Length: 114
Image (cartoon, rainbow, N blue to C red; front, side, top):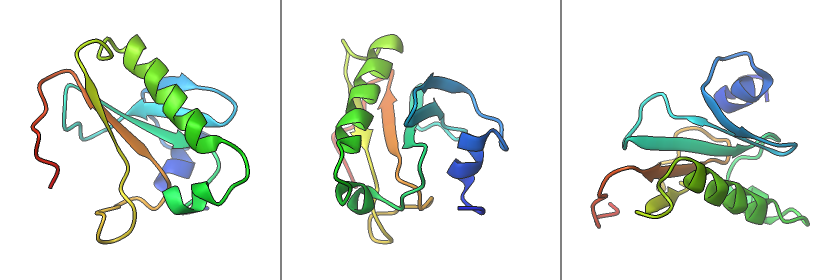
């Protein structure tokens, strides 16, 4: 998708600090971090949200979570804990309409989700 900021990051058209990459997934540091560790895990293929991803016949959702777990270990937040968040649609506060998982950690997070 030509105007999608995450597609541009995947293509290297917008710079990012990459922390993980494989054939299907890219992970990079959020430019507006909400925690000391704030990484976005995205599929390289454009899909709007988790609903679009769930319609696929492969296991991309599982691959995204496996990548997130590996990143959490590499970033030294696996032992102390971290949060994975994906927003879906307007009421879910999705601001970029390319599926992405926020990996947040590096400090005590609040229990409050909204």
